[in-house]
Length: 68
Image 1 (spheres, rainbow, N blue to C red):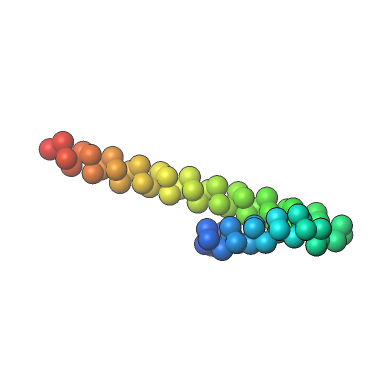
Image 2: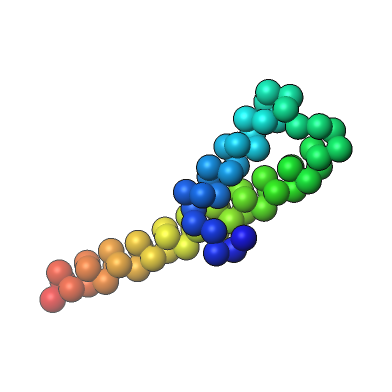
């Protein structure tokens, strides 16, 4: 799941949430679905943090070039 793209992870997370909200998930599978949702949230959070760091590095590099 770690190699899943952000958009796919968000799509799957939205599916799970929709099923939970609409009472479409049987109590027997609820725990597994919640575990999957938590994993997806962590994956998305990690991807956002990584992208944020990369953007900051690019911007910092650009700003240093402009100072020359």
